[in-house]
Image (tube, rainbow, N blue to C red; front, side, top):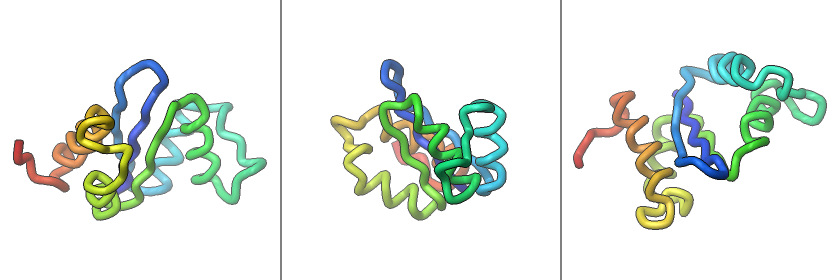
Length: 104
């Protein structure tokens, strides 16, 4: 599972998932269309990450359940005070996917 956290400039962060790299590419191509440019990227996945990041303030792409849980606990982006909304967006996505227990 791949977990993506998008942090827009004006709105609250939100998280979503993809089942695989191929699923990620399909989802990003469906939403970002012509913004996906492979010219400067090593592969289609990297091109889609670049297209996704283009209009965001910040973002994270976690390539596994374990990496997402680890980031939730250690990445400053998810600080429980400064990064509260990003923390909750990723946490809620992990709970929804039964990767993390809902202990609130």
